[in-house]
Length: 314
Image 1 (spheres, rainbow, N blue to C red):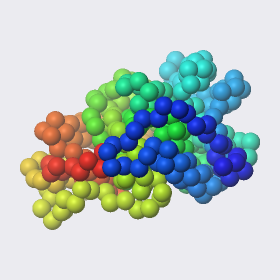
Image 2 (cartoon, rainbow, N blue to C red):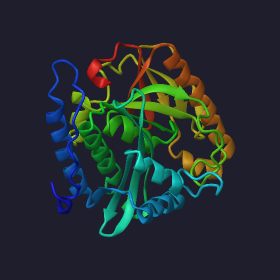
Image 3 (cartoon, rainbow, N blue to C red):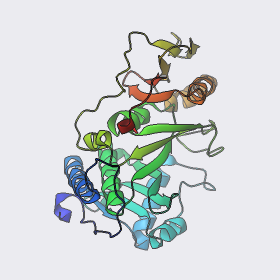
């Protein structure tokens, strides 16, 4: 590939880990992942490249500052931290429209050593939204990781943000691992406000057929085949837009989230807090009971199953 095609060439790395038995060789999986990332970048109209120079890292810091509008004492990342991460060989990549940085993603290696990457923060400017720039960044991150023998990427997201849930679970086919109450503490920024920072911890198994299908931009199935005809609704939206509790018993359980939690935090903070408490109670209880999130519907609700989840969904 060339930079003109959207993604800069990624160097081959020796010592790649073997995939699960029966899967394609790592080199084959990585090569196809890089090709998929190239297609995603071209479709989004961006060039993706690693950033290591100080002026580029300052631009990443400023991009995040404009997106999150954080408390000055608590930015998503600092320029100094970005500099240290790049020196350590970690992932700092920008999405460029011409010379303008319109998106960036930052990740670092995590345990087990040399086999996992934790994606800490990713954001796209207002100018880049609606173009699948975020998808292009994640596809690039997958190719970058596979070329280095990394088999999984993890990250967190706010379970109340419907569009992020659909992106992570529906479009990328990431798997929910754990519910983390108030994970970051108070963030006090322009997106989270004064809300508690509950997060879902997700894992992206990079060499799974399900993820490969998702990154090829083919439509993937959202669930493990569990029928919805016997589903129960554990949490729904009331006519007033608040959380409405239902039943937890059932093989398949629906858990709704608000239509637009970010607006709700600004216009009806008390209702936003009720949603936080309700989703925390219901979703964490289901996960603690051994259930698994198997998808997220565009209508704005999680699909949770007590049935055994296929290995390729992980």
